[in-house]
Amino acid sequence: MSSEWPLWEVFIRGQHGLNHRHVGSLHAPDAEMAIRNARDVYTRRNEGVSIWVVRSNDITASSPSEKGPLFEPANSKVYRHPTFFDIPDEVGHM
Amino acid sequence: MAGAETIDRTAFAEWLQRVGDNALILGHRVSEWCGHAPALEEDIALANQALDLIGQCQLWLGLAAEVEDKGRSADDLAFLRDAGAFRNLLLVERPNGDFAQTLMRQFLFDAYHVELLRALKGSTDNRVAEIAAKAEKEVAYHLERSADLVIRLGDGSAESHARMEQALKSLWPYSGEMFIDDATDQAMADAGIAPLPSTLRAAWDETVAAVLTEATLAHPGQAWQHKGGKQGVHSEHLGFLLAEMQFLQRAYPGAVW
Image 1 (tube, rainbow over the protein chains, first blue to last red):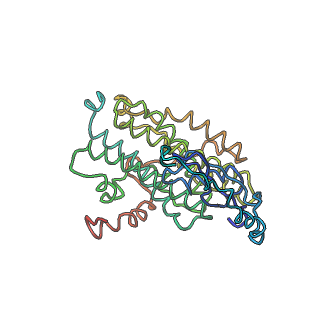
Image 2: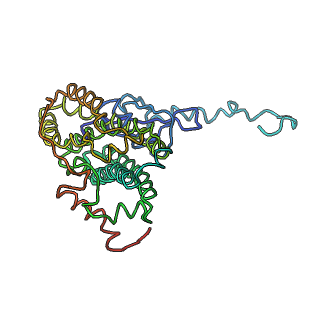
Image 3: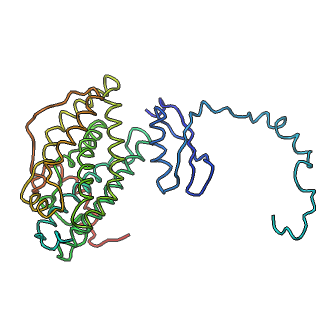
């Protein structure tokens, strides 16, 4: 039966977290039931204060085969990292 | 607490067993779905619900044991009483049947359970009011879920509609017992501990009528009603349920984790 239901991705905002984090996926016939199922499947141990669900089909993902063109150019641009500043001792730990 | 001081302890303990046994027997019934539900998500939801009910039963039977004061614990009450000593409604011991029957049983009971717990939050006995306040949150969710599924399946495919209609027809004659008052109920109402069951009927009727209409299910109307569970007169189904539920404690008395 569940194979006829679409897949949903579940995002939960934890007790102390500011952002919703991806926790997993589940099957449900519609958004309302996806929220309910997420409540039962992913918040059994008081994990969350807010739930988002989104149809897996509606997520546009980058393709692993484009990993090179997408990410490699950044590798050679070390100057984009803030590692070349001298930090005065008075500042302490950053 | 004034009520609890003056009230007949036997009646109070008896009443607590009724509330606790409903949670225990329905909780066990729902737990029988574990690993068998139609979808993984549904399986987990049912297991959660069973655990909610068994947790509530622990509190009610714990208080029953305390009030009774005969040196028995909640576990003793759950695992060492025979069928005739159980005080649950006949509705909750009905077999699971198909998914429609499990859901309809849950819905008919949830709609009553939530009204009962809401009323109990105003009990003159603090212990009762506190357990009710905790349980009410869980049960409000149970009702939201069961009502939603009754509507979805009633107003679903031709097959789901037919199964829901059949479930309603077979369970309806077990719904009336929830609202029958007896001497124990009267004693609890006089002490301000619990509402008379008959006073919960109007709100239940309203919820049930609204959900059945939305689910496109025909209201069964007046029908002959079974009774006796509250007084310990049970159907044969309870014996089989207890045989499974109590086996371990009966075969290995006092066994612990």
